Amino acid sequence: MRIKPTISASSGETIRQLALAGQGIARLSDFVSREDCAAGRLVPVLPAETRELRLPVHAVYYRNTTLSSRIGCFLDFLRTEIDRRQLL
Image (cartoon, rainbow, N blue to C red; front, side):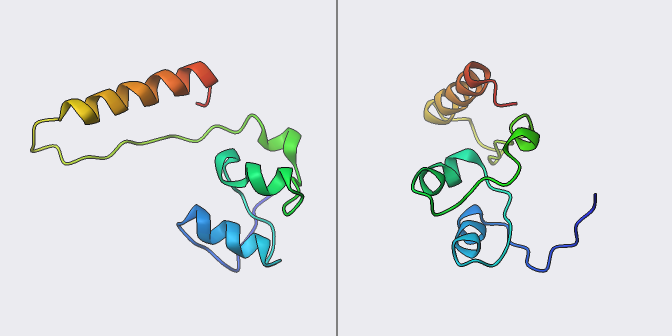
């Protein structure tokens, strides 16, 4: 089913605020909505259908510079956590 949104935003926090204001149904990541769902401020609508939904994650950085050890460690951490939690 295709849905034509009436409001669109690129910020998860903006979409979260719109949902909290009663402006409609939002597609939010668990880490964005977990606290609000636990407190009853947001209610999962299709949890079974969306639980297995996997979306790509991209790490973007300026490629014409040497990758700092901090960035390299952070990327390694992300890879490990994504694999461990089976997020993708």
